[in-house]
Image (cartoon, rainbow, N blue to C red; front, side, top):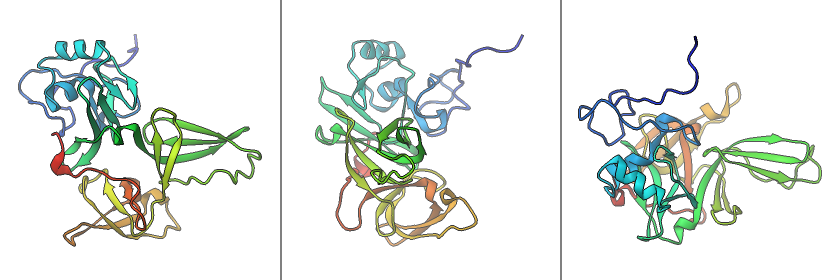
Amino acid sequence: MGKKGKTARLKRKPAPKYWPIHRKESPWVVKPASGPHSQQTCLPMTLVLRDVLGIACTRKEGKLILSGGKVQVNGIVRKKDDFPIGLMDVVSMPDTNRNYRVIPSHKGLFLSPISSEDAKYKLSRVENKTTTTIGVQIALHDGTNMLIKVADPKNPVEVTYETFDILKINIATGEVVEKLVTKEGNTAIITGGKNIGVQGKIVEIEKTEAKKRRQALVIVEDNKGVRCQTILDFIFSIVDKEEPKVVIESEENAVV
């Protein structure tokens, strides 16, 4: 008889290398549940509370904290200890007035402390656009979708969002507050590849003709003048070249 359902087990050795766990402490570790982020690009809630923030000593203590509704992710109370937390998610604990944003680093992912005001907004990158019978559906990097109704779906002039644009969204209302277009001159952070976590100025974006735009080569120069190359799919703009719109805390203030 064939296997049914998901595999609920995950050993520590094949777990993502950036997870802050001891590989030989015990054989098993929490496996992230299906959700907005894949297993290779997320941290399960238990690891965040126990191994990253140090709020809980054991998984059981983490479950008690979560069952009491003490932790919010992007403004929503999450009670499952295996819920996946990924890139640019906002983790809030209202009782202790602690807020964090998940940012990439050279080790993988880390939690950067942010203010209560910054915790009211989340940052999402436009991954795709699809025209429907009533409007345009915008797919974001965190698995959420936005449906924008337009007068003429065949000519949706009302929709100005393009792929790789960064949207600053109010968590409480779901409204887009600001839009940041990914272009040369912007400050960006690399979210994947061997240069993950590097922040710098976008010097050049390759003009693609015979290949997908996601695979376009991008040159990023950090504040020390060192240049590195990645692809556009790994670029997440954080500051506009003309006017700073999005501020990301530095890795030095991170909780790792």
